[in-house]
Image (cartoon, rainbow, N blue to C red; front, side, top):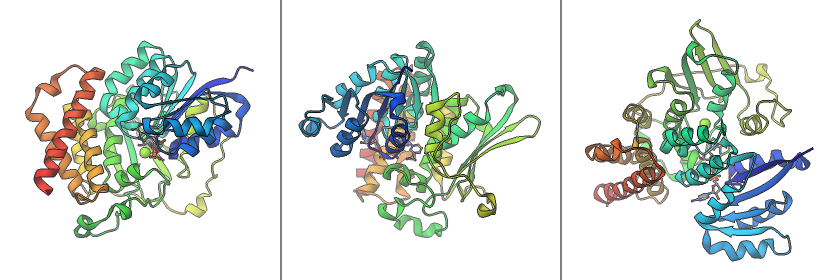
Length: 392
Ligand code: NAD
Ligand code: MG
């Protein structure tokens, strides 16, 4: 049997480690081309040796020697930095997991698609920044994009065998995050530590804080539009505190197809890994009597302003997604560094969006890797200015 050639970008993170958990259960089925990480060199080296990878890459050039030391005697190549990531992403593979966090995942993802690999996309930020470019690149190289975000995997699965013309609406659910039951008046005082605890999912720090603000759901609204080509009016967000129903697709005959499962990312990762087949996965089998009830309620846009902003971004199109994401990443950094408060994140992003709107030319530009990177860089500068002016 020929082994499937796979690579995992962001292997040391939450999604990366869940992917490795699945791969380790059937090591003989895979040939690992590349594993990448940033700062956790011991984990990266350990997994590269376990999976017998061709190359391990750290995004942090200062850690290259540490990585070499940790891999010494293993025969595994060590590389570092953006060029190391891009080179590793260009190596031929059948399946690549894109699980770097943030816009840093865009270039490696594009390289992987150019090499013809099917891309399992957890890195939603790249789709928000450059959806059109990613879709065009995938098409040109006959590569497939497979959603890994739980909601989008759920929609993808509900759409198997269906015709998009019979889709009336797509509903993605959100838990409401760490502060869903807090009085709104207390939100400005929420700390990064409090925001980084999720009621249902175990995830990386950044996406967990994004769940508390619902910037995560805002990115996912844009992601839904990019994957499935539906208009903003057809996408709904509903709070579902149990995180058991991940998404629903509504059809013209009134039927709603829901994807129901425990909050365990190994389901969506495993589905993307084995697509178009289904294989046995080590996820809990739900006991519905135990779950007992499903709750749903409308999100309050004063509590979650990013949901309102995301709809503006979808309507504007073009490079607005790149501006939105970069402003969000900058605001999140400032919140983690305790330079701004919890509710200030959305205010900063809104300001940056209006600044870039007044510079219309940026938004009318054609979408290329360069124009996306420029929009991203300009938005980060604008965000820093807004933060200094407003919050000192
Ligand atoms: P994480 O923070 O746990 O891991 C991020 C990974 O990216 C790590 O391997 C880290 O070393 C690497 N990395 C960080 N900065 C980098 C940079 N500048 N260059 C290269 N590599 C870098 O994050 P995560 O929770 O695993 O999320 C990864 C992606 O998957 C994000 O886009 C997130 O939105 C998405 N996602 C995650 C979950 C989840 O359950 N964790 C669910 C849905 C979608
Ligand atoms: Mg999600």
